[in-house]
Each structure stands twice: as structure tokens, then as C-alpha cells.
Length: 307
Image (cartoon, rainbow, N blue to C red; front, side, top):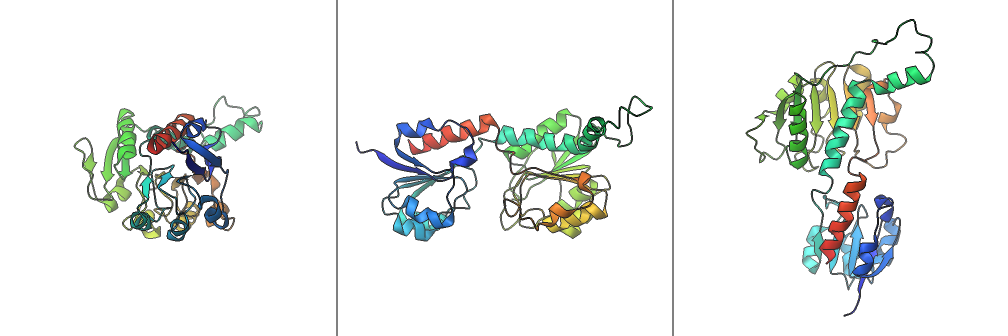
């Protein structure tokens, strides 16, 4: 049997994850990163390509005459022209569910960092200020308990349900808004978006980016949030208006945690990088999906898709 020609386009996103399963499936060429200018040349002779974020267009498919399968090493497939793939008879496979536990865990990591004022308290000890204090404690930045608080979830898919279950264990009163209008749950109260924003102490976003969710939370919507509310986006960049977040961090006592952004990496001109009240804003570089276990599961699933 002739060996498959497999091209991996952006392995740097997988970190130190073992990629040896690909070698058992064909002749592999791996690139750490691939720019838009390099994509066409690199996939021209490929039968199988694996991409995480590299964009694959109709033009690429027209020139890649041997291409039979595009494996997206992610859940979202918006970086592949699916209509063109269908036209050319090229299969496209993604991987769903591999990072659910990782994203759920990071949701709570971001929440605890913000509500516990971790940045402040870590610095107050390391700077020596605590050593000079006359008190054994520091209650200048009070934190609240999750128990008894109202937690609103935007997007009750697999990740949203996982977050809801754990929030319930902490004693939170959980409600949700279905961005698709399809998701139903008898375990949690369904509500509309306006009510959720106005009444919830904690709001977490776990929705995909589409026509219904693009700019879903703009300045006017977010302005209705309660004083002291915490809003976290672990869905997709573009669901929360970033300029609105930058304004509100400095205008109102609202805390934001963002792991995803409309343009990644962030441009240096992004207003999020220039807020005054930095303690109200916690940002991580799209890492919620990247636990060691999630990346291992992702690569194994991609190899299974090729097989």
C-alpha cells in the first residue's frame, strides 16, 4: 500500500505533545507554523493536511489535486471553506469534546483569581508590605463566596453544563441563556439575556461564535450588569465587545476575565491593554483548551480521524 502524504501545518500549538501516532499513518512533514504565504506550497502534494488555525481556502483546494482529507485539530472549523471542500469531494474532520474538562477547570481558575483578588494579595506579601503590617491579616479587598450567588451561563452546551454542575455544587443558583434556542435543561432555570445580565453575580460565556452571538454583549448590554459582577468569556472572541470591556473596567465596578479575543494574538493597540483598573481585568492567551490531557486527547483523535 502506498504511504499517505500527511502535512502538519502548525504543530507549535500542540506544545510538547507526542505526535508519533502520525508516523504510523503515512509519510509526515511537520511545520511548527505556516503563514498564509506558505500554505499553498506546503499542501500542494498532500493527501491529508492537519491544521489547527491555518486557514484553508477554495484556492488552496483547487491546487491541492491529491487532497482527500482536511483534519482540523480543534472543534471549530471556521478556518476551512467547508462549501469548497464539499464541492471538491474533500472530507473535513474536526475533534469535539477533547477540551471540555480543561475549559471547565480554567473557568473556575479565572473566577477564583478575580473574586479572591489574587493579584493584590500575592503582591502585598511578596513586596514586603505584609511583613510591615501591624495586623496578621488584610481585609482591604473583600471577597465573596459562590454559595448563594446567582450564576448565569450563556451557552449551555457540554462545557456550559459542566460549569453549571460544579457551580451548583458550590451552592450557586444557576440559570442559563440558550444562544441557539435549542438547548434545554430541566436541572437549571432558562431565562432571557437581559434578565440574566441584570440579576447574576457571575456570568460565564461558553457559546460558539456565529451570527447570533457576534457582538452579543456590547456596551449597553454589559452596562446593565450588577455592581461587582464577574463576567468571563471562555467561548469565542467577538462574542463580547472588547472596546466595551475596556470602557467598563474603568467606568464601573465590574470584573472581566477573557481567555479568547477577536484577533489573536492581541494587537498592541487593543484598548484592553491600556485600561487603568487592571485589577478588574484578567486575561489569558487562549489557553483554556490546552491542558496536557486535552492536547493528548486531541492528537489521538486526529490520528483516529485519519485512520
